[in-house]
Image (cartoon, rainbow over all chains, first blue to last red):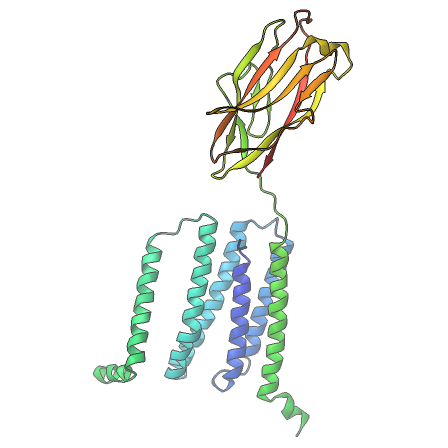
Length: 162
Length: 190
């Protein structure tokens, strides 16, 4: 059984991971970023404490939505860091690695747990989500395999654009 | 090396962040675990429930988890309620249950007991008789069958419907208007 607070716990771990990674790559990020993520994780812990104390007052519906919103913020931060590396810092290799190692797996894990929670709670997700998820996965896998097999593909595409 | 430089070295920062991260992650996981361990009691349909049957005695009350059968007994004639109440397994898996005697009035040793010869609760399924809990009278005392007052557990199949047949009999000398109250528990092993 998964409680709605599981998403808050997942988000805390995501923020802690971001904190450690931004500390490791400190030359590429503002100095305060790792500490800000630690504070975000601490806020999540406070959030768990409040949830525990008011478990009977807050309904499961409300608990799900504020935990899910916190998870969305954590995921948005991962994507924002990815975009920051790619667009602001123009570190394409690092951005690609970040996307493959952090952004994509964490997004997939989050989608898995949210859909699993919905299934256990008897929530009806539109069937289209499965198809769209499969299409996105197929596209990402296809692009990744293409780039893996021919690393010059991206450079060629850039040249074609020019 | 100056202390200030040591404090602001990258390794020191990383170790500090790693330690605080471990602390936050473990206390958060412990908090979540404590929430997971909080007991929760949900009101739900019983695994085996009572429901209306064709021969419910008039004036009976039947709810999912309890029922009150207001049966009659005739002097020198056996009265049978073929299907007094249904016992339905509401789940898609098998469940076991038994009948257990709780109380009976009039109590043993009182003269009023002599107004009944027998009161039998027989459990049936579509294949026939399964088991029973019987009350018979022997000189102002109730004799229970089984003598322990509780039957063995019997397994009702998934979504199966069994029923209780109620048989009553009073002696020819019985006084009209006497009342016998019996409380029986249906113990279910889920």
